[in-house]
Image (cartoon, rainbow, N blue to C red; front, side, top):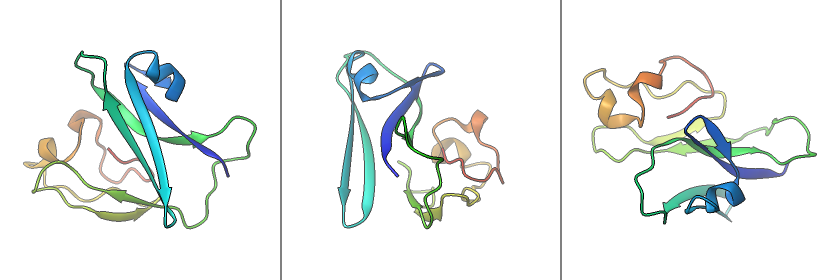
Length: 117
């Protein structure tokens, strides 16, 4: 399946070209079977990304990638990191540390499968 990187910003989904028009660079690397996506802000303005990940490329089948796993880490020492299956639940975060573990704590729903913040 062909996947393309995508960014959700201000409630709008942006592909790499649309993001570049706003001064945001979405890059992707694939090495040793690991696919990584990164976002660089060159706009000079503060941005608050809501989600960063992949979607299926236009003209390709359903999003069904057997064995797909996602590596998750945060920017704080108090948050867990590791590999989750695409349809797993997110890590179980302690409520007092939640603001340090996910980008938008208000959007975090424990037990929601297949959605990682």
